Amino acid sequence: MLRDITIGQYYREESVIHRLDPRVKLAGTFIYIILLFIFDNIWGYALATLAFAVVVKASRIPLKFILKGLRPILFLLLLTVFFNMFFVTGTHVILQYGIIRITWEGLKSAAFMGIRLILLILGSSLMTYTTTPNHLTDGLEKGLNWMNKFKVPIHEIAMMMSIALRFIPILLEETDIIMKAQSARGVDFEHGRVWTRAKNMVPILVPLFISAFRRANDLARAMEARCYRGGEGRTKMKPLVYARRDRAAYLLVVVYIALLIAGDRTLAYFL
Image (cartoon, rainbow, N blue to C red; front, top):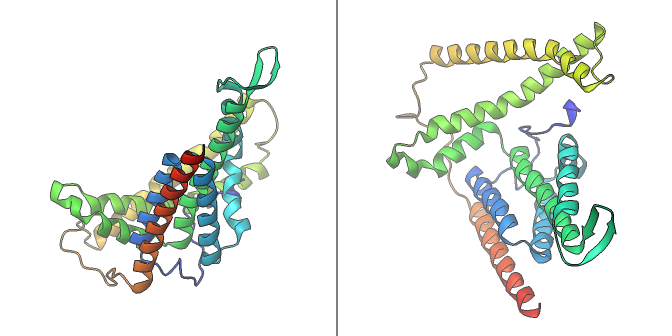
């Protein structure tokens, strides 16, 4: 299960998506997620799915690797769909047996919610697959640099996000090592009652927390040894500069928004 968690991982590949400016990918992902909630209809989800498929094809990342990130949240996804199916009220009843009542509105809400969550998770994960943590930090800092006028510590926030993304795969790998070591000592993590399995997690959590605090302390000492004093006055070895492909990507985002608006109005007109 831990090997299926791909959050924060970078997939090394030579593609046009990998070479895009991180500010373009951050803005595009942010707009993509917002539009998933604004255009809540079949046209919006169809176009969002098509756009995601095009970006995946351009990124050259295997679809199997991307879909693997859904396995850890599969239970939460099914639970969300279940609650929407049985607890959303409506007038068009499809099935009713005792207290169980399934309506067309409930099925529609469950399907849309499932598609929305899948596209949201996969779309946001695709950004981390194609962007290194250093580029994400630089893109976030450069893109939100205007907020420094309001005394918002953008550099520190970007640095914390970068460190968190770096720590996720490291801690997952360490958790896997600890679980294998405890299993070799006879601890069973898969069988027994819920309370028993919860108790068996203690031998994992304690050394994991100790390791996490030790790594954080070592990182803080390393930054102090290198005279790190925040973002003020710092320069970049590779400053971010927009290229022609970045402007073309912004144009495609504008076209995507225009197609969503035009399709939504056309659909509303005929319905």
